[in-house]
Image (cartoon, rainbow, N blue to C red):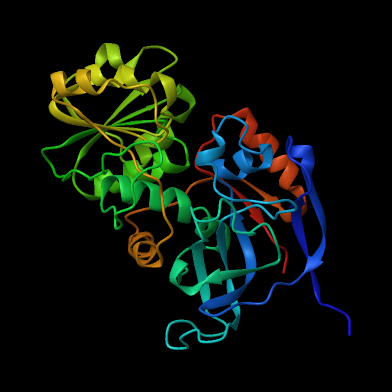
Length: 340
C-alpha cells in the first residue's frame, strides 16, 4: 500500500535560502495528545533562518536538538484533520480552524513548512474568526513573544542566556514604553499590546514606517536614520528592544531610575552598571502556549490587535520569502500560503 505524501520544504544541508527544497514527503501521523493540521498558512520567524544556517554563532551547549533532514517552521494556521490517540475531543474537533506555535523551544523547528503538520493540542488555539489564515499565521511566535515580555510570562523557565528571571512590569496610563524595531513582527504587536494596556508608546523605526506605526497607535515616532533615540529620549519606564544584540546597552540612558530594559536578543550588559543606574535588564525565551495564544486571539477578534503582513509567498516560494527576510526592514510579518 502506497504511503500518502504531501509537499513540504526540507533542508538536507545547512546554508542560504537556496538550501530550501520543495519536495514530496510522507504525511505525518499524530501521536498521543496531538492533532494533525491541514496547513493553510505558515508564519516566518528568525529561528527559521537560524536553523537553515545551522546556528553557526550559537555555542553547541546552547543549541536545541535538531537533525537533518528537517522541515522548518513553527507558526501555523490551518484546519484540524485528525485527532491523535487520547487527544481530548472536547478541546478540538475535526474541522476546527486553529493556530499555534509548535513545540517551541523544545524543538527549534516544528515542521510547519508543509501541507500537513502534527501539533500538540496544548500548543493550539482556535483561529481568530475575523481574519484569514495568512494573517492568523503571523500571530503565534511574534504575538507570544510580545505577550510574555510585556503582559504575562506564564512559565518559570529561565532564559538560556541569563539566570535572572524575567518579570513583566505593570503597564498603564502612567507608563511610557519605547519599542525599538517597532515595525517588525514582534515590535508592531508589542506596540499594540502596550497601547491596549493604556501606555504611552514611543516607536523607533526607519522613516518609511512612520505612517504605519502611527496608525497602530504610536504616540511618538523616532526615525533612527535621522537621530539616535538614546540622544533624544529620557525618563521612559520601559524599553522593549526587539533588535537587541550588542548595541542594546545604549538604551540604558533613555530610562529613568527604576525602569526596565527588555532586549529580545541579549547583548553585552554590566550587572554593576545596571544596579548603579537602578535599571532592571532581563530577557526571556518565548514558549508555546495555547492558553496565552487564545488571549491574543480574543484581542484580534475585538479589534485591539491586528497583524500586518509585509508579504505572502506560496509554499514553493519559501526561498524567495527567506531572501526577502534577509533584506530586512520588514513591516509586520512574512507568510507562506498553501493552496487549497
